[in-house]
Image (cartoon, rainbow, N blue to C red):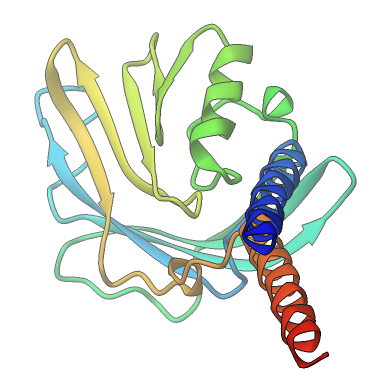
Length: 220
C-alpha cells in the first residue's frame, strides 16, 4: 500500500512539474513557424466592381509570395520574401518575381507595425490579442484580426500565415482573397510543443526510475 502512495505522489509531482515548465515557456518570446522556401498563392474570391476597393480586381486574380530568408535579431525576426504581382485567373506566374520586400516580425506584439500582414508570430491568438490591445483601432478574435476603422479582417492559420482577407462596406464584402491549396509550405507540418515534450520526458524518466527500483527491491 505504501508503494502505491509513493507512486501516486510521484505522478502528482510530475504533473505539477509539467505545468510549471509549460507556464515558464508560455512567457517566452513569440516564435515563427514559417520556413525559408515556403510559397503562398492568394486568389481573389470576392470583388465588387462598383466599389473602389474591389474595382481593380476580378474573381480569380492571384498573387504569389515566397519566403526567401529569415534572420533573428534581439527584438525581432526579419523575413525577406519575393512577390509576384497580381495576374489573371488563366495566367501563369513568371519564373522570376516582380519585386522583393521584407517585414519585421517583432517578438513584442505592441512594437509590431500596423497590418495588413502576410505573417505573424505564434501562438497566433495570443500575438493578435496583444497587438490589438496595444492598437485601439484593432480587435482580435482567436486567429482573426480586424481593423475597425478600415473594416478589414485578416485570418491566420496556426503557423501565423495569412489564410484569408476580407474588406467590408457595412455588411457587404467588397473584396476578399484566400490562400489556395496550391501553396507549398513545410510550415503546415506542425512541430511538437516543447513544454509537452519536456514534460513527457520527465514523466517517463521518473516512472522508469520508480519501477526499476521497485523490481530491485523485490529481488532483494
